[in-house]
Amino acid sequence: MDKHNLTVVNEFILMGITDIPELQAPLFGFLLIVYMLSVVGNLGLIILTKIDSRLQTPMYFFLRHLAFTDLGYSTAVGPKMLANFVVDQHIISYNWCATQLTVFGIFITSEIFILSAMAYDRYVAICNPLLYMIIMSQRACQVLVAIPYLYSVFLTLLAVIKMFTSSFCGYNIKYFYCDTRPLIYLLCSYTEDIKLIILIFSAFNLISSLLIVLVSYILILVAVLKMNSAEGRYKAFSTCGSHLTVITVFYGTLFFMYVHPKSSRSLDVDKMASLFYTLIIPMLNPVIYSLRNKEVKNALCRTWKICANYLFKIHCRL
Image (cartoon, rainbow, N blue to C red; front, side, top):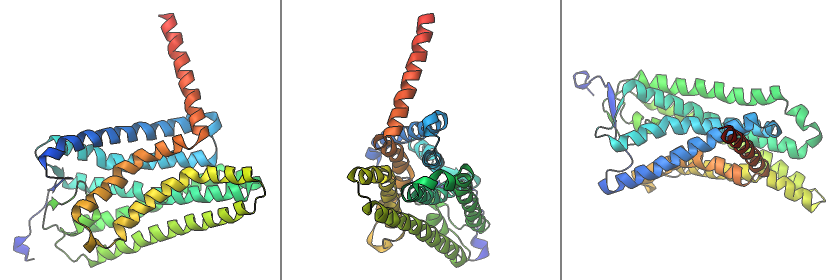
């Protein structure tokens, strides 16, 4: 474009999930419930795995950080998306758009590698049970979550700074939040370098994390098949059930978004897939880990009894 046609973009307009008036109220109600369940579920998991003495193991340490990342990226998107249902102008400021993209990118990238760390944790627990607490020491666990956080901060800031130091020729984002793909189409300047950075790191993130997960579970499967006891095999598989369910849903959605040919799907399908992994998955993860994990269910029961007894004592004093 010619320079005289360039204007300084101070804000963007989010086109939202749908422009059909009849769907606005039902979608708002549904997504509000989903987001509130996600907040309550993930906050509950964070608090529960922090205060319950029986959940102070590496597995629940990683689960706490999984809940934290779920809460982080869903909150980066959810409140603004819900607010746009009840206001006439779906405007997001330039700085807030950059902030939303940064926060979302940091947490979603961190989650990918925390899921990989959880797979490695299950591998050590099943294949090296006698050395489990030595290998998965507190320091080792802290390093395994610190590296994803630091890497995701570096990667996200690199992409966001590169993008937002360029010039934008448009302001209509055909999405319900600030994401890299719709923003790239609004850039005036040469975008091939930005696309290349995003493509290389996205491919590296997906392939490397998935490779860790696949290798871990192949080794787990080999170890389980060598077990003589049927009870031992069942117990080994049951400890991996929740994590396998979560990674199947998570990676399945990401591969649909980024590997499935774009020409064969509409923008509305893209929006629904994005909605699924930005709001639905963060709501499902606490449910999956609560329903399929006896230790979490027992911890919930213990916490509920303690709270009920405490409230009863207060009531008696009154």
